[in-house]
Length: 102
Image (tube, rainbow, N blue to C red):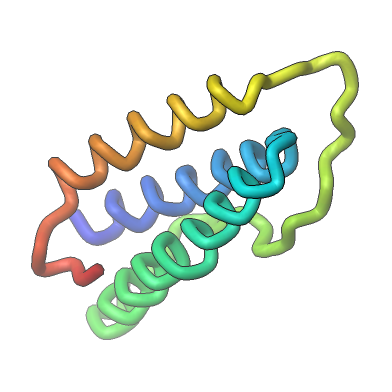
């Protein structure tokens, strides 16, 4: 179960990095960055510590960098990005076990 939560958080980090790269509004970008650095990374660190404690191999982790991806013809509105993140937060809030930390 810890492995599944870790893999899910890695996916969240990767998606959220993409959203950060495509956000236009400066405040939205700062909120997304805060969520990545203060919330998701904290959760990941807690999960990784628990997996290491039980000698469970970690799932493949997405890159840690914020490298800008080319914004070719794909366009995401800030409203779309906010809705995606908000829906994800609601799901995490409902499913995240208290024992997993943050």
